[in-house]
Image 1 (tube, rainbow, N blue to C red):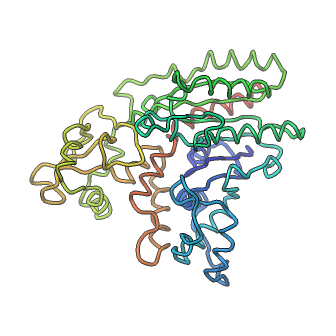
Image 2 (image 1 turned 90 degrees about the vertical axis):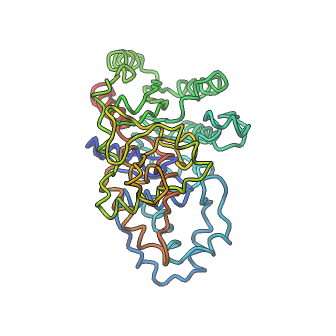
Length: 415
């Protein structure tokens, strides 16, 4: 059974991929500080929560428990005690439950090698991409993974610190590492830092394989290109290095390229049957008022469907953290007599559709919605905006499945 540590775990795309690949595993620790992702991860992968174990707590004692963690509500800034005070008892209990059940160490800056199991088979680190993405240029925060920048993307160097602690204390290094991030990490501006990172791993004894993969080549009707770094520990065993070199030469995932007709139909991912009350309500929620500013969205983004008809071989653009903006992943337009809201010509994709296009199963999404509806006193805790952000920040599961299948084959045949 694989012993897995998911740092920057988000909603657990790695765990989802291991499950779908039927690879027996145990997640011994997660690291995530965003309370929305913490809650979603726990429900999606561990099922309903039993909050009765906190029945003797009052609000003050719950806040005392949670205040020991460096938490965030937006993935950017720490939560204050005042912010915790503004949350309902149900939300506070659920966040605490999720942290404890998922063995969440919360803040990567405070994680030490001694906090983790010694016999780790796989450590994943999909660190924040905000300062690496092309869009960061607009906000003049494109410092990338500069070691001393103090930005979110530079948290990759916390993984360096943890691995050094393993090495310097003679603890067994993780047998494999997997990084995922935007492909701009390979750009001229950021490549030197990325090469420094790869060289560090090689000095520790890892063999590195860099992949740049698009989800549409793995059957998902979404064009989403990301870079992956799979690092396999071989120490000073040159024979294993040679075998890995040969393996990746013969099994290069970058050589996979599906024809349009081989990609799954987008129709299977879009919920266009508006006789279903759930899908209709979700579609209405995703239908913006047709203001002048949205005319640009309507005219300049790809049409994924017209009413309930999906054009042949249509695929969505990259699922991002927001949809009500230009550019977005694509829109569904309405004929005049089929508008869900009179005068509104189109809708954006719904959170459900976004999760499906990221490779998550509908059953998993429904489990999250069911718990979400019960959590807060007045309205669901995870709003559609939060759900879209969680999906947009995740990793396409189907791509991870292929990488993990390779890793499993390597583990059996080479290591």
